[in-house]
Amino acid sequence: MKPKPPAVVVSAGVPGIGTCQIFPASHPYNTDISKYPVHPKSDEYISTIDTMSDRHFLHPDFGGKGQYGMPINIVGKETPLVPITFTAYGSESDPGPYRIAPDAKVQPGTDRHVVVLDKDACKLYEMFSAFKNEDNSWNAASGAIWDLSIIHRRPLFYTSADGAGMAIYPLVIKYEEVAQGKVNHAIRMTVPKTFRGFIWPANHYSGTNDSSLPPMGLRFRLKENYDISHLPYQAKVIATALKKYGTIIAQNGSAWVIGGEQDTRWDDTQLRALKSIPGSAFEVVYTGEIITRQ
Picture 1 (cartoon, rainbow, N blue to C red):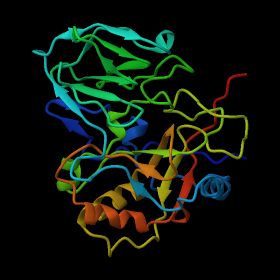
Picture 2 (picture 1 turned 30 degrees about the vertical axis):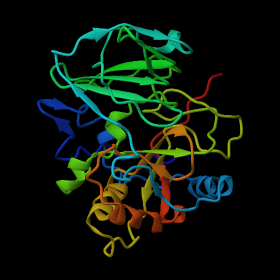
Picture 3 (picture 1 turned 90 degrees about the vertical axis):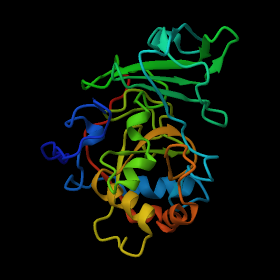
């Protein structure tokens, strides 16, 4: 018999910016999973991830005096809507125009995500492998528009700007959240390889038929008895969130990597303490069945 997740626990302090909530309180991104049952394959999944890579410890992919992390672009109604041309997954992408400023920041590296939050309309515009043209239009491999006021589910098996078909912004750790002492949402995580299936709120897969591999959308929780009392402030706030909201597999990448925003104010010494947390300190929680294409 499969374990049954408990009723959704709605936490106080739903993430938001300005007058915009970042999805409703009952959205899986914002759900407290601290009491969810351990997944029957928890040990297998943890072991499999550790065999994929030489990295067996958590790794925050942000900091470095603002050199690393996911850039977040905040715009308003004064920012023009611009055309988007999709170069790879147009049939699964939300058509333009997108509200993107001419000087929008692009994620460093090969993924080139662009994440834009419209604080007036409470919408997210996100793109993958994005390149700006001279006329301020953009080319991108894929993209998605998210209405932050509703529990938004894309058509089944559609991608987004992320491999799991989820939104990026809600799962990224923001500096201001940590500075205020609480991260009230799940955290984006990557692993090297994934199964050809997904668990809601994921909606897309990018993997193989090896069922020992974790699916997109799989949720991990830092074990309740893991001691975080010695961690410095920024690391402790994030570790506390890892116990309450956990991580969620959003894309293929390096093992045990968690995502935060690009910000010069991160303290690298404090963030480095997260690298002492081994993958074995986590457990997988059961949040639902794996969806596969028949």
